[in-house]
Length: 171
Image (cartoon, rainbow, N blue to C red; front, side, top):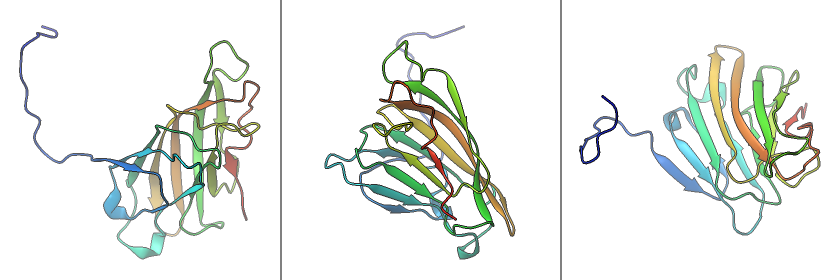
């Protein structure tokens, strides 16, 4: 078996859809499964807001993926739909340095308690979000308490980054 050059294949069914954006996003449950490629040539801040639990159908299983094609000096900020004790990010991100053989390579950055914001800002001290960073957010529970599972790999320009600036509790 294995790969055979010259063989053609046709893929049918629903496409996950790759969307390109450098502006603010307010996501809904209908956006589940989409991959967002983030870029921002003017270095303005970009805010991505996840759905509010009460605004639509049950969110359990709702998933969004993000790929940073171009970092922004002002950062990409991901907010839960309703900040507070009823919604939080949980999980971790693997962090590596945009250049090899640096302190930040292979660091696992875990969410703390009550985290309602993720900031991906590559040049920030103890931050991350360089070009090539990828993150997936999945709603795990959506009755009266939502947990947005976080997984991915982020790159940083800060060779000494601990990742401490990535996960933020605004409450």
